[in-house]
Length: 263
Image 1 (cartoon, rainbow, N blue to C red):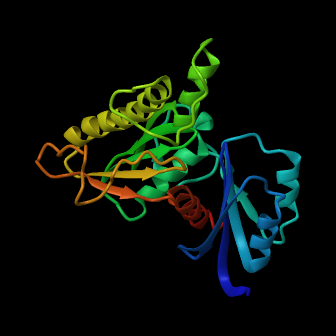
Image 2: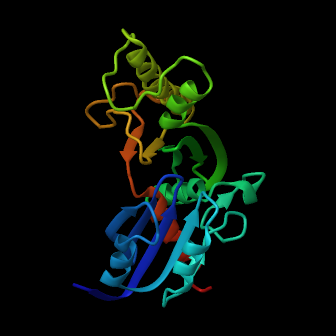
């Protein structure tokens, strides 16, 4: 059944491991699909289900001819989001804006939509783990990049002669009782402690900090209002506001599209 409306937007977020396509009706997400290849039938079915009027896309990888042909064959305009070139509704203080990952900037835009005047830390757990900060003035100050879970597991096998290749799924212990659990537990618990450290640093510095967790990898961080397993109190004794949002990047891209609608 085709949804008929005058303001359906197609948002495409091309990541290192998959492509996320989201349909927004105005500022509200109404449908989504995750695919491995833009030429998959799922992508074509997604396009045919909706009467899109415009769209936006970004990518963390080099886009191939097949993807560009797909974009070129769409019957509605698509904006290519490029940090440092495309206008954004926040102030970007990054010193090398042309090298900034589009997903990182889109994520902080998405996080700031409903939190104007707040200090926000965005943690994106994917192929890489990124930590990005936008202050209460609406200024993106920058962030850090760290290897993701799969990258850490693969590197232990690739750069040693004897350590085996271990999956992220499986038993995790505080102290590994086998080489398998030692690697998996070391990586997963290390990621948790790393994230905990960033939250401690920013939580102690900013009294009304919002923390957003997004990305395709799940590390069982127990982010909830009733179960702050590791979240520290801010310096005024309150707990940081913890939010999980798997659509943070698409929401940011949609806001950027809205901001550039005159173009």
